[in-house]
Image (cartoon, rainbow, N blue to C red; front, side):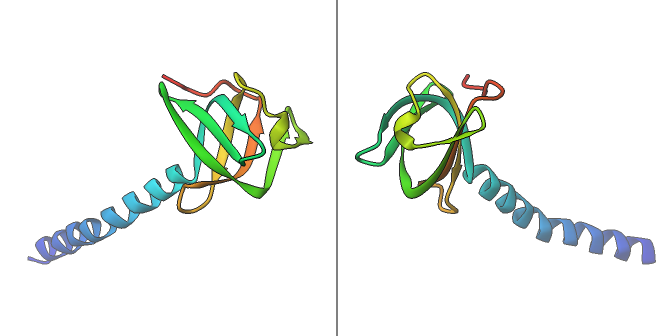
Length: 108
């Protein structure tokens, strides 16, 4: 009988924890994206990235941190065709940091 109760408690705990763990995983994924730069409009403060054959345009924070091959640069220095990794705000709408270079992102 005790084993059944322990098993029941363990299953109940997993059922409660699973949605929380999934939400955390989704939040982490929403905070970053990688792909190929399609376009940059430094005056409008936007960058368009091709990810998995879809184009997505993001607003860029005024104080965005841009690194190209490890060097500090500006948004205007990011060129179309470059492979980039974007760090996004918690809501996934604003780019906080751009890293260009390094390993090739999966864009399939």
